[in-house]
Length: 308
Ligand code: GLU
Image (cartoon, protein in one colour):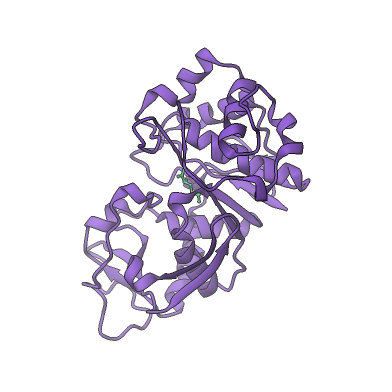
């Protein structure tokens, strides 16, 4: 079994990011599997190499060791930085163009959001189909002077899947997001395309991430289908909130790893996370390794935990 942690290096990790990493790590280690660290630095404006290195340092400090991947790694599934995987995304895009379901688009608003994982609070927009041609047919950009985004047609159909924690899901992409971006007009790859290509090529069988990305799985399953690839199992985990019941954000420094490392030990942090996950009755200090015997998916709670 191969799992992964796929952080965006756009700031210091907060407790919620670490929570996701821990659950993914526990699940993989419990199965004697392999854990890959992939750096999702698609967005050139927000990604920074020093943040990526800081993520590695924080994971190591917490005892969350990975088997493959990271900033400088070479390995059978590398490179592990999305910014170095252009050729692979290019190849996948070519395949999608051949399905005849893509078209060039000159709308801008959603373009700008497209490299980011569409976390619920980002104010999702449903694309109205403004640039969709009357007849689809593998249209390449007829006017290369004007650089445009590439968008993918979505069918009016329910995509069904079962999330390991949240159970059966049914999403109609035409009402959930509409035709979505594969590549922005400035050439940046969209999260949805890159994540599918990478998870598939890296042989990931279990995707663990925050539940704000639960419905994105439907877009990804659609891409797996068009590319003739087998989707992994999806397991979304609850988000952590602050006392004001807002989900933790990298902007809020009080619960980021910089602050937490000054005040607590790795075992204290892991203990709190085990408690929030519902696998420990009390938040006593424990190592990630020590938490392994207590971990099971059926014991995990689905409710948002409030960090106090
Ligand atoms: N890179 C995304 C993030 O940090 C996670 C995407 C995923 O796990 O699929 O929010």
